[in-house]
Length: 134
Image 1 (cartoon, one colour):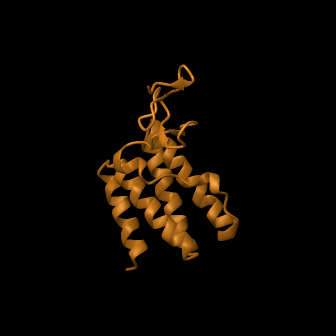
Image 2 (tube, one colour):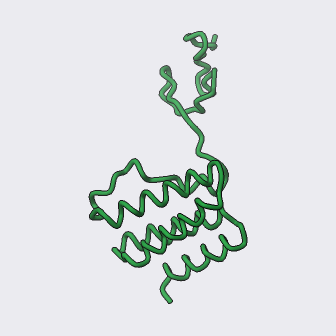
């Protein structure tokens, strides 16, 4: 049994146990490898598992399963080098929550959280548009 087949089997087992996040993560992992190898049969299995996850899920899990199905449906229809980048998703969303939104401080150019009102590096105040420093 290949690594992709084993990962898909683990994804199906996780789905059967109701572990949707784990099933999603494993399905993405297997699908990306199968897609990269142009293994159409395994990409098809990835889509089937994704559709099963989507049918059982709600909210964010349902949305991510939809992205999975869409991405790998395109992978079957289009050559590897022509797949749309907007379909990619962040595996980190299943390892510790959704990715944090960020912004760049206009004063010091450091990346900080999007909700920050004051830059933690230079003290720039976003709400007033001026520096908080001395």
